[in-house]
Length: 93
Image (cartoon, rainbow, N blue to C red; front, side):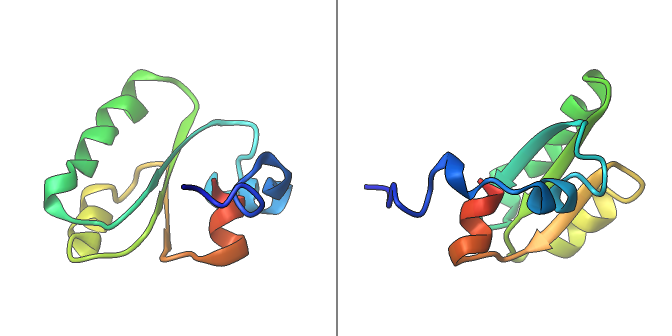
């Protein structure tokens, strides 16, 4: 189950929205949360960024593919937050 007390819409903050959107809180925002590993296919999200105007991507997590993903998404509207937990993770959701 999911801890509904922690993971609920009340955790949303404008500060986290600005952080995840790279300072563009009015933009559309995609959020990936998980372990950054090659088998996740995270690089495919680049297509969405190019097809939907004014879209940003936040990648929340860490793992063996992080460096490669940072290189792959260099110059794109993408924010890497690293691993988040507790209140910060709930706010990111």
